[in-house]
Amino acid sequence: MIGFVLGLLIQGAIFGVVLRALIPGEQQWSVGQTIGAGVVGWLVLGFVIRALLGAIFGLLIPLLILGGAYLFIMSRRGGTARRR
Image 1: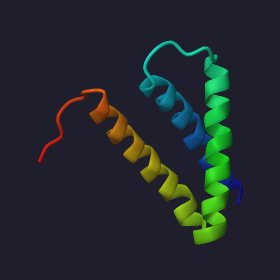
Image 2: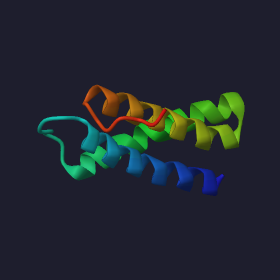
Image 3: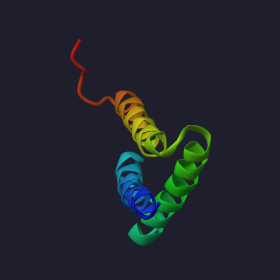
Image 4: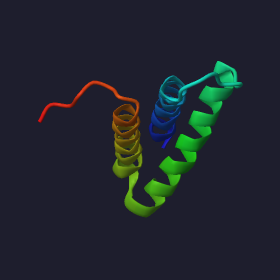
């Protein structure tokens, strides 16, 4: 359980930083607030998914959600073209 929570904390911190980098324009939040919001959101999402599907899915599905959000936002912002 401790490893699961630590995994969620690390993923949440990374999620907060990546989300801040993806959102265009100037943000009013500090970096600490951004990381905190990412950690809290990731913990909630991870525990809900763990309760529904199990520990492995609780760690993997949020990563898939982040990857999908990244691809969606980058395609909307005119990012590099994906290979076909």
